[in-house]
Image 1 (cartoon, rainbow, N blue to C red):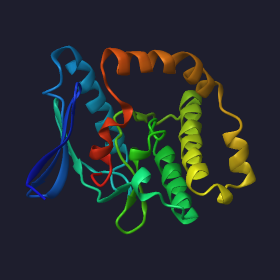
Image 2 (tube, rainbow, N blue to C red):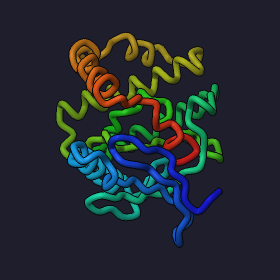
Image 3 (cartoon, rainbow, N blue to C red):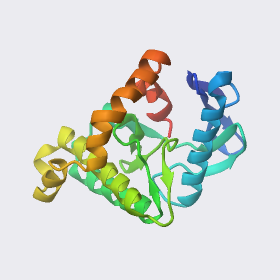
Length: 217
């Protein structure tokens, strides 16, 4: 592995895998974002920094090493994204569910677990979540937070349904069968607008960052 490798480069900047005095780290750089989107890239970087700071010391998520206006450095997690690992082990999903509960107790919703590259099977077989750009840190954990947390759970269960459907409990099937009003509003109103802006206007594909996330942490 080279000392530095660009993993992702898009309108919002670039993500680099780098080897330095701390070992392998992931560096998100908003300074090279398109000038008209730099404000948004910096905003997303701040969101990620706040979420990771709230999860300091938690196993299974990247650790925030340092950040500034345009750069965020986080620890590297070695593993494979879910779509490559294709784990059918119910124990992995049980561990992932436990990790998600710990995120929520810390006041953090991931908000992007629909994407398989954000769920990682680490080299030791344990579960991890990465890419906290869209995460929400809310220490009060009010009604909107709880609704978003439920969506995190539903997205994890959708992946479980894909890879080991026979291990779903009846309660999990009930959760999958009853999307929240937030989920229905997203699917019917927000998502079409989001897809038009990101894919048609910006030319940005959601899965573009798979090489950032899988085996990258």
